[in-house]
Picture 1 (cartoon, rainbow, N blue to C red):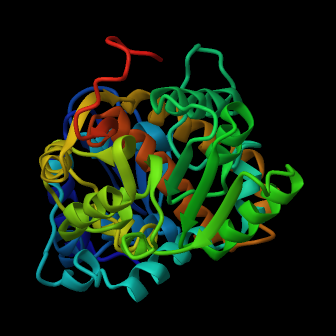
Picture 2 (tube, rainbow, N blue to C red):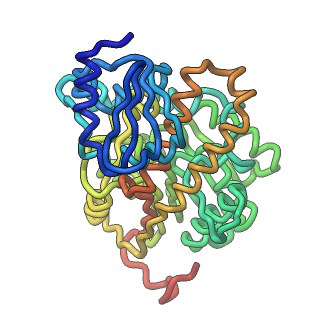
Length: 390
């Protein structure tokens, strides 16, 4: 359905996104935004109420794409780079969307939030992740590395940074499907423990431990990180990959405090997380449909919280471009398995997930988000090599 007044208002709204030329297409009309030859077309099947665009540009456009009310003629990824590179021009009514932007961070709420994303089916994730079942930034040492090789590289890289020795104990907070701990047990003969809130990940990791005959080395627990201090266990090393984004801004210090409670003196702790330059709200569409409760921290607020636990920073590294490439691999895999995915989920879900993967890749491309690894010691450790050992 087309409303001429809404169409006119939409054209006025989109004219500010003029960094590169593109076409707005409606049923009877099309409009050029910017100057030059258009690089893509935003084809509206129906108009979007202008108030929806003003309340949340991200949700309004995301929902229109999910519902098929707008399509992109051209490359979706390139179109998203165009818009996300100008995200400062998006509108957001924080008061109206307070419950989406600031949901509860109680243990019960965070368990539901995690499970809403990670428990939609291991069979689904196996279709488009690689054989390692790693759902975090890979590490492409070589330009032609496969996704599988890059994920193996990533885990090897993290384990080398942790300076593991046989017989050490390693805790993985938010262990996913367990590949990092499996590799740590095989290559370094360490005793590893993983914790997760995802029941699907818990079941799969437990099965993998049995298949690999690693019961003497590895265990996995369904546990909230906030229960670590009263657990009564301590570890030589702690790692957390892609978990911090789920804890909420008010809990960053608490998260590090919980690590401190279980990390032995002079122990090493590696934190791998998506970050952003400033303390801002996470994208509202992403928070509503993909990662409820998710918050992306800034690097500086995480670094500032570490000193309170006597964590001495050894190394900080940004792997932003590696995550862009990882996501593009996932998006390709997703498209290559659409025949099977369409048997699991409806068209709306498929369009939503396609948008999610490409939008994240585009946001890494434009520098809207980064991927940092921070390596610290608990207290002063003068027993490590003088230079990088990895």
